[in-house]
Amino acid sequence: MKNNSVFFLFVLLVSFSVYNISCTSDKLPQPSAGEECDDFNATYDGDIKPIIDATCALVGCHVTGGGAPGIFETYAGLSDFANDGANGLRDRVIVLVDDPDNGMPPDWDTNPGPNDLTDEQFEIFKCWVDSGYPEN
Image 1 (tube, helix red, strand yellow):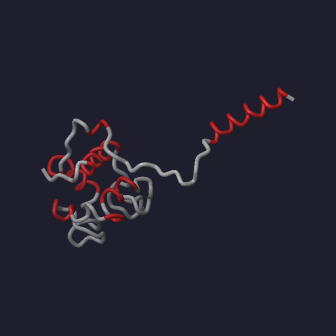
Image 2 (cartoon, rainbow, N blue to C red):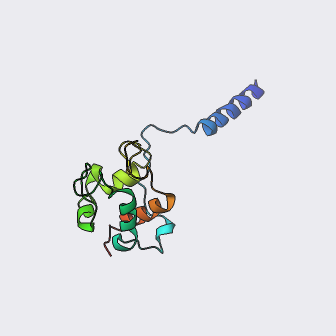
């Protein structure tokens, strides 16, 4: 009987580690700037505008006459979406990064630009957002 108890305990411990059981009310922390941002001060003028021009401010999207909300051709146009909650830049670009429909840039077949930011673009953008969206 003693061997069965030890075996049961072993199986129970393995099950917890294999299935990584957790509470359903656990929440992941919001993405934030890591050590990669400590020595990097991203600005709109120096780092973000080229990313926006290549991935967002494209014909049919976030440009004058485009179909997407916001005109991201200037800092003023982009900054209107900086702290806009569920439709803000942090939510759409960082939090929803893996959402093909709501994350930006979208993974739509009709998207005229890239479907995803590169890892480098994403990290630069995240550092910029986490530092408060500085212009220059």
